[in-house]
Length: 154
Image 1 (cartoon, rainbow, N blue to C red):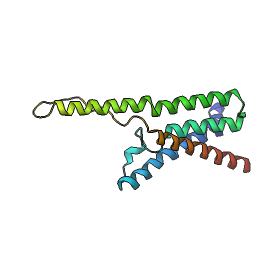
Image 2 (image 1 turned 120 degrees about the vertical axis):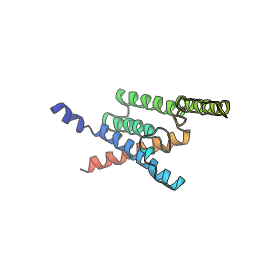
Image 3 (image 1 turned 90 degrees about the vertical axis):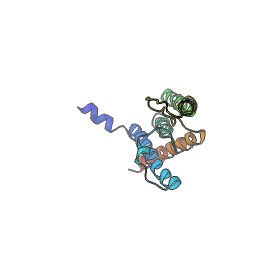
Image 4 (image 1 turned 45 degrees about the vertical axis):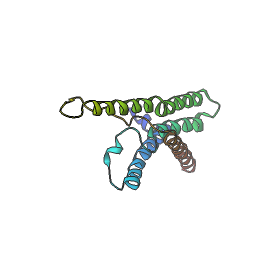
């Protein structure tokens, strides 16, 4: 059971998770400002501003750099991992979302009238725009730096 307690003492892990939660909560605020409505679905959906995936991995890599050193192998691994996740969020997942949008449009146009299509619509908002990824990564780095400063003070 002590091992689980050690996980809760891992400041790098906790900071990365906090960055992810803050990014996800920020989506609620963005939704409120842009669409003037409270949409709690954004707390659990993929996509949107800012990218919580990017905030998570950027905070993780920054925290690893702060703890293990900027020249460490651990920082290199975390940074490469972060770039892969952010590339995937803005590249592959975004492309899949665009394909889903086109397929949904084709189905809508093909089955106009009395034809029925019983399948569920494909999820279109899978990935992020490059701006959403950049904002998420800046948020993650900022939170990790602020947490690092707070840990040094305490």
